[in-house]
Length: 122
Image (cartoon, rainbow, N blue to C red; front, side):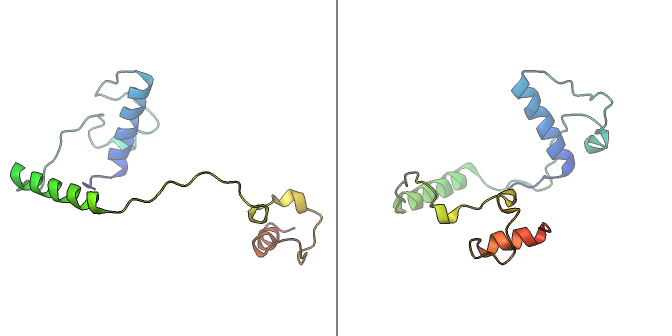
């Protein structure tokens, strides 16, 4: 990724995305709220981008990389799609309440179910 994934930026992103989803235009200056600490230090929704590293990639280089990646992808053998199937009954993990009366060493239960019952104190 491009970095910048701080709790402050994520909070801003989700606030903006939610406003777009709801069709609500948010002001840049945020109103006082319970989550103000996540929007500091300036407490605004939109912050100016900070470019710490100069982009030295010219358009020709980027296009060459893109072309090479697409060419490599076109050579990959694709995986066939798989249709949906029923989960076999032996893969079913029952809820603990179905076996509330069961003993811990019951042979009908798999190891995972017995462990879960033991952890839940049944």
